[in-house]
Length: 393
Ligand code: SF4
Image 1 (cartoon, rainbow, N blue to C red):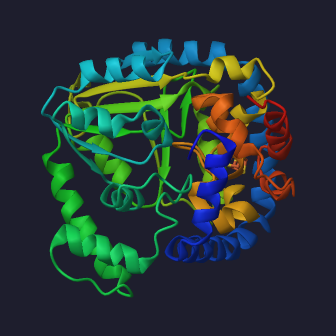
Image 2: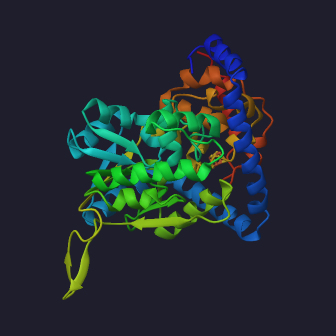
């Protein structure tokens, strides 16, 4: 979105006329709200909400020591561990891990969008494929991701059928969701089996054990991290938790507050693959990846943790606040920066792209506080946006 208020207003008005986008967002929000109401009625989910809010208060105030501890633990696990202060540093590190020309498959992560990972790799001659279905649709459409959990939320089934027809060279019935998912599965499996590098994000990384935890429903993350010979994790310093148990709690909480009653897969990865099955001698690799690298991106987070936007770093990126927001309901992903959209996305934009970019976007917040009501970690999102409104540039 444009960086001046006039430009932002023009784009917000234009988005009101984008009927397919509004249909996609409306359908997505309706399905979310039905599932979300059932999940938050559970007492175990409410107990987990209390726990994760407490854990996030701790991680926010210990962010620096936690990420440093995680880098040490990862190194001692035989993992290439890297801290990147800026996007440019992150891309430079990744450029040394991924050889030009290698085939790369990726799972979904907003940090990849934040640093421009796919564009960077493609500019070096790497063939790159998104293995998450929503991200694959986004790759075909050329849009930015709409929402934290469902990047293609704004693209209704009719448009997905058109995009698939163009890509696969045959027609698709928009109501045959099974058929469209099967076509993507077959195509992407071929790419995963041929890939040299699998890039995944991390829901959480434990400082103590250096264990990377991911949660997903599609099964693409597990394949992406285990089948190619190199596994590269690109995540951010706010995703580090004291212990693996805390990380698993985060993964569950993210899944529940995204409206899912249970996650399909939670994966824990601490080292490249290996086996001790012959005389208990550890031999690497076995079936999974041969090399593992982790890049922890800062990009403004450490500085933010010490300032007025600190509360943002308690975010677990469940996306619930986006899906109850009346402004997001009518303007969809147009209300946001390059990567982050909707309520908390405006504040993430301030941290990762600058307060000057986020300030014009902040004026569209109605201050209804619906986001604060749903946030599992108790972030005062509307208060953070109110602060941004005072930072006119
Ligand atoms: S701000 Fe809260 S509700 Fe919104 S994505 Fe982050 S954790 Fe979820």
